[in-house]
Image (cartoon, rainbow, N blue to C red):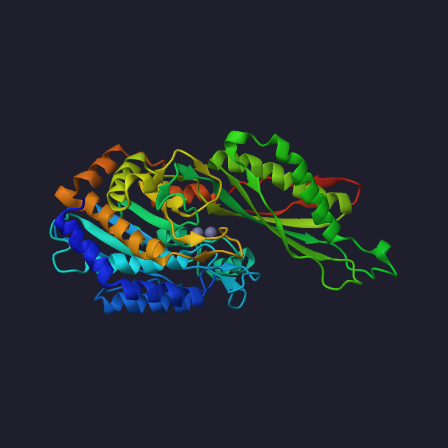
Length: 455
Ligand SMILES: [Zn+2]
Ligand SMILES: [Zn+2]
């Protein structure tokens, strides 16, 4: 049973229901990939502004945040929603090859419901501290080559929107954070796992020698075969990965040759190396780099290996999960809430936040189909958006009511692995490297350079 003041906030979400559903539809119909979500961001900006919020815009990238201060001292709680879609050209409702095959648009619609409820007269009366609502770009770690261009231009430093927001200081002063991601798992209405894999983002640029594929292939160096040989070696390494490290390596070839009658000279690979800890990611990555370099050496090709920090492993805070579980059970019933100690092998940049503060990255049902698949869609917007908003409002209230004592308890017991954003960002910089990985000395010696030169 919800108390009167909780029910009042639930009614406020219901009163805003049509706006929430309209947002889900608009954003679904305007899918944009990371750091390009300008239309989606503008839609959200307008909705927030209509609700009376003052926004702090990221400006040169999409996304923004806004603060609600209760006027009483206490922790600052962050609630997030993600803007970006996937490149998923086989999705029947793809627009320009893009589709919300991860359902982030439903998170945005739900956050509008949260924003509307918290603007109700009296909504903050019983709360302490403050709430930051944040709309972030670029959760899906894709289009790595393009993001590297943005990085080299100095627009971003990190491929993931939340890490980039952290670098920009938009998380300064935030004490704890949560978000609910959409899921197509319909066995429950709300869920949460113990955590999930982190990842490193990799590109490998193979350089061969172009030659006539029919007339003079002996003059060429086939960069496509070099990539294939490197990938074969990576596959042969898989049995060396320990089960408990949850290593995942899944390369794609983003350029495989220019003309069928030319020996491919410029072939490019993108991959992640995922794992359960930064240490085991680093260890697996060293093997993967050796294998990819050896593939180039086998063919007499060259390869440039470009590694960048991806996302840190996610460790959800157990205390925060316990508070959330109880709120969500009040809303949906205990049988419709499934909090587990399972480890997810996907990655999210909520993991980066979990390195510096207690976080919870949970799930709200309402989608159907396969996550990242071409049959994914929101089949129950009531659950994915409206009920998700209600769950988030209840959790925010539970954390910040009674002098924010639940949030304070979470903070007192939390042990994030890094002291703060600066220490964390310094640590992940060590994952970056740019290696010319194969050198031919001319006397028959082939050298593989596999470690980043020390800085
Ligand atoms: Zn996704
Ligand atoms: Zn997602």
